[in-house]
Image (cartoon, rainbow, N blue to C red; front, side, top):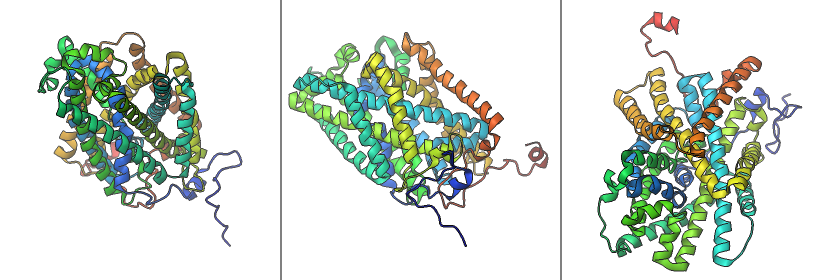
Length: 511
């Protein structure tokens, strides 16, 4: 007589709290067919936080490149399209909750995949922590400046984190419905402000023109400044890959994930180019030196064009955006943690699910890490500086990640015998090259102060990942066999890598 399966309301675990490989394979997993391609697009668009990008990143881009910050967005756009081509090619073959971690594990092998997973989840944790910290700072400053209400920022950070954790536990559809509501608010408000500026014309009486699309608009900084602005332009798109972590929950994931990602890749960069162009002229194209020093240029523009009521509307939209991208980074990070737990890279109990088929243990860990990473630094440097520092660090991490993934797509397609010289080769190489320049400008020459230290922080995290790999190889070598194996349940047609030159037996034997 067969034993009864465990209720979905229980976590499968060993007496010591760790899930065994057999228990993981029997676990019900995340809810199948819970969402479709439209929710993939929502997660990816909301993950970028379009309004928060305008509020948080434009100041830094303007400081580096002046009015040519618009050009920086325009140059990065083809790179984003080519990157999403890579995501789409992988998603058609490897639908997964692990996203880029699973794909690079399949492309580069177990050892590199292990270290990649370590750096990838680290980037999501920092992304989530920075978002919740800066959300608290924005609320605190707005209430104090507009209403004279003085409450500590960490209170709002805690409330936002509790809200996101609760929705994440309830289910992916509930989380995405909330993210869609927040996304609608921010997009409508920012587009309305941008169109109002373009229709009424710049407040300084100048005429609209093509200057923001020319290198000369960067002034003395030239291409060096544009390169640094491109770093933040790439940061502005971080989160667009988050839809790829829904492989187990999307209907027809092989088609649904690429479709949702393509929608995001077209709409998000177009939004940035249009709105940033309006912001440059709204502030005054001859006042870009002041723009780069203004801690909140979006608020300045909103006040000038819409007055106090309009400013309040824009602030609320920005807060919605910050909360939305924090929420989606949290969701994606929890699913990568869940995948790493299922595969045993991290403790297997992280691969447990709740009665609602949500990765509850991974959600708890993401919540704790968001507090541990974001709150202490925010107390030391202030919640706004947390975004400045963490944002720069996230930019480095994802630039490396995106370059690596483009190259990995080429390697993977060759390994399964499906390589196409243009669709994979040319587009993959060009996509990587677009990201190489801004990465180069972040590390050479090194920036002054804390920003110059951050590339070494990232290198240190990689070193820790390598040490963790060596420890795992020595103490738990069986873990490496499961790296990159957790894919969408019920998918029996996942292609396995094989040597490219099947006609060369000697090469096969050497491999």
